[in-house]
Structure formats: C-alpha cells, structure tokens
Length: 101
Image (cartoon, rainbow, N blue to C red; front, side, top):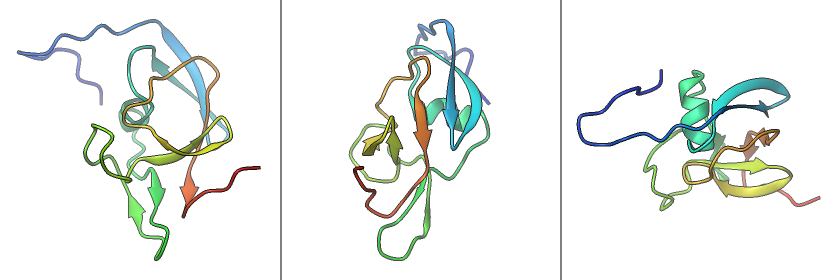
C-alpha cells in the first residue's frame, strides 16, 4: 500500500525503478525510501535483532532506531527508513549485526 495523497504533505515521487530484495526483483520509485518501497510491496519484517533474532519492522521512519537496519549493496547496518531508493540497489535482510565482506 502506498500513500498517493495526503492533506498536509506533498509527494514528489520520481520515476519507477527496479531493485532486488533478497534476490527478488521489485519496483519502487525514486525519492521514496527503501523501507517505504518494501512496506508498499507488503514486506513488513526488515531485519532481526542481534541478540535474540526477533523480527523488526518499520518503526520510527526518521533514522533514530535500529529497526530498519538492512544490508544494501553489500554494506551492513544501512538505515533503510532514510536511505533513498535507486535503480539496481541490492537490498538484503540482515540477521544480527551484519558483516562486511
């Protein structure tokens, strides 16, 4: 589900782009965040906590918590709630702290 109109906020949605999420091709729009694109596609779990591997989802949407940490283009711990979507991004679910390769 995407918000198309809002009584207070204006949306400057860009062109449609394609990205992958855990190896699956998905569509989103420039100028929306990675987390928003995933949420619109029905993805509610963005990662898992480091200690007990409990599921985490879209929470604060302003980059202050760690609920949206994912691995993006090989970089772990990216705050997807504030990271703008771009063409050909590779987004992966992260379990725990993530690792650099």
